Length: 183
Image (cartoon, rainbow, N blue to C red; front, side, top):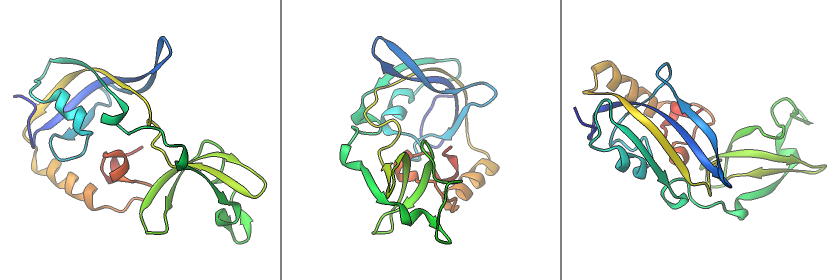
């Protein structure tokens, strides 16, 4: 069976980004923990799906996605300083949840959910980066198709549940992984 719309797909792969003359491993999907998704449902980047469409079990793949095909260019204006008091709980700065390197679910003034990474904590502000962690990166995928099949009723039910859940901190418009699928 070939990868096509509304087929369940399981892949193993290494995702690397270019770091000078080397590549840095960003993510690995293994046989024990493969990437499993329904093809053609908007769960993955469009360019990713175009590169694996028509493959079947045992086929290997290797392709690159430029930033404009993946998570866009890194935008300096998406790094902002927010008043430290918005991170207070009962009048005290929340040091347990707000620290450098932490990714936090946030909401803009139009009610849109965003994920922001804490870059720095200063005396009066918290410096947040609202770019996707892979913005500006060229993504390299090297892997293999390990399963393609028609979805079962249970798989369809699980996808329906995930798309309707409300798990704090997930932004499916930003990572295209679906609500409960982002880590």
